[in-house]
Image 1: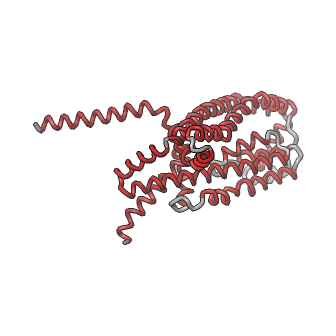
Image 2: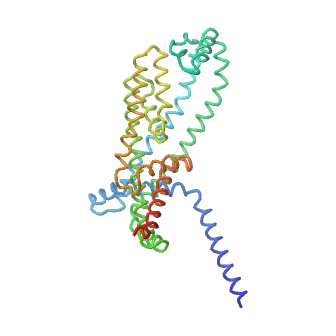
Length: 348
C-alpha cells in the first residue's frame, strides 16, 4: 500500500513538472515581451488612470489611446532610427570613398601632445597623409565588417520593434485587467509570504515605476541636450546622433561614443572653437546631467537606498542586458526589504 502511494505521489510530481516545462516552452518566445508589457503597464498606470477618468470609465478606449500614445512616443522613433541607419549606408560609403581619394591633411599639433599614444598616432597620420594609397589599403578591409555590423544592428532594431510592439499590446491588456491580475498576484504573494509577501508586491511596483522614470527620463533629457549641442555646433545628422544618444545614455558613459568623434570631426575640419564647445558640452552638460536628473526623477517612492538602486541598474544591465535595467534594481529592492523584515524581530 505504501509503495502504491509513493508511486502515485511521484507520478503526480512528474506530471506537474512536465506540465510546467510544457507551459514554459509554449510561452518562452513571449517571455521578454510579457515582462516588458508588465513594466510598461506598471510605469504608465497613472496615464491610463487619468484617461480612464476623462473618458467616462471606458476601459477599452482609455487602454487603446494610452497604447497608441506610447507607440507614437517610444516605438516610432526607434523605427525611424533603424530606417535612417539603413538609408545612411550609401551616403557613408560615398563620403568614405571621397575621403580616401582626397587624402589627409597634416595632423593637428595637439595630436602629438597626447599622452602615451600621441607620438605614434601623429607618426601614422603623417605617413598616410604622404601616401593616400596606404590609407585606402588600411581602411578598405574595414568596410565589409562595418557593413555587416550595420546590417545586424538594423536587423536587431527591427526585431526589437516587433517585440516592443507586442509588449505594448500586452500592456494594453494589462491596463484593462489590472484589478484581476493584481488580485491574483496578491493572493500568490500572501500564500508564499503572508503580509510580508504582499508588501513585496508594492516594493516591486514602486521600484519599477521609479526606475522607469529615472532611466527613461534621464535618457530623454540627455538626448535633448546632445541634440541641441550637435545642432548648434553644425554637426551633420544631429537628429540621428541625438536619437543614438538616447539609447547610449542607458549605458553609463555611453554618450561619449558620439560626442567625442563629433568634436574630433569638427577640429579636423577647421572648427577648433566648436570642437572645444562640443567636448565641454558633451563632458560637462550631457555627461554629468544624469548625476543630477536621475535621483530627482527616481524620487523617494522607491523603498530601498539610492545606492542600492544604482548598483541594481548597472549590475542588471551587465547581467541581463537592457531588461536588467529594471530586473536588477527590483531584485535588490525586494531582497533588501525581505532582509529588513527578517531583521525586524531581532531589532524588536
